[in-house]
Length: 469
Image 1 (tube, rainbow, N blue to C red):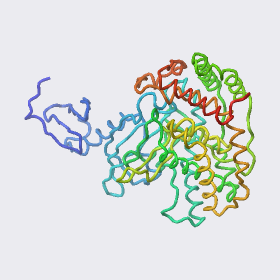
Image 2 (cartoon, helix red, strand yellow):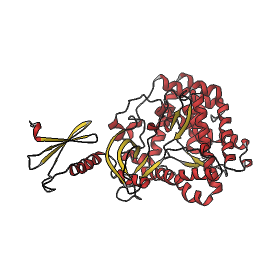
Image 3 (cartoon, rainbow, N blue to C red):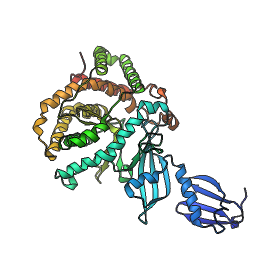
């Protein structure tokens, strides 16, 4: 369509360009923002005197309608109050395809007005996966509820407990990103649907970054993360001992775990794949009998945690679920833990074992494995002391006993997750990640990085005497 430019009025509304045709009975509004979008609206019924404000309201609704999360303004009002108005939004996928199957994660930039002042918010929005298979695999109705309750109700109590224990403000452990709003569903905020959402601060805009999952963490990062993990476990225990009613009512509900049929099948298939890979490695031949017995042991045995040791276990504590912030010398100065969908009530050593095996660089694990175990225990005890708790109930002998008791059961998680951690970047498309079925985890991985990591896991379990004989 050829248009005479002189018949248009151009109005700049923030980053949007609006073109209004004056002589037509129907106004054509052309919106350009990254990609051209053409919207035709019948505005003749609005008013003979057409104002920019009318145009802006239409544009605002159109840009919000394009956002995958609906009614994001009502979510943010949970933090900012009713006097909060969104002007426009920009969004993109935060993680690369294949980096996260349990949810769709968006980075959203929001230009808004709050208490008559303009402000820009950078947030992360978590939505459930789209495919029916992934919804069942991750038990999304339960896991979203768990994570929403953790961020909205439990995490604030972690801070409150530290304050009440006399910990100085500058020494408080703010372990998780700030929660800004959430719901289980759009139609009913308490009933799960495809618009379940959790809104958090975008840590990347505060200079937090994720380390390379394939390379793993060096000793500085390992110790930094171990210290934060120990604090997480200690604070949860402190909440249990100091506020037992709250813990029983609010925290334990975040630690429920139901094994879905799809989850069990996917886990068994991935462990079987790892087992078959060991059979094809000449270096693993001498270990095959113990590998098979340890795998069977992991599927059939459970450990019931004894009090007062049981705590909030993250259950998926590895490189991708933590973000670091640095000073000018590139030294880590802060860290946040994310993704609390799989939490359970168990011994904290379960997180420690999986983290050490999954996330450490080879030379760090080879040379400092026992040191890092000791460092976790020391950090755990120091955190308990900072909460004014009696540490005599947590002797190191019991800690080591729990470590050796739980480690053989963690073997299966360690070997199956190598397939995820060592997967080549960009091997999954966005569409495949969002519309995944049970085949998404069956693609083989057989490069040398994968093989060497699998063998290293095996050697570490053998070295510690954690393979079942």
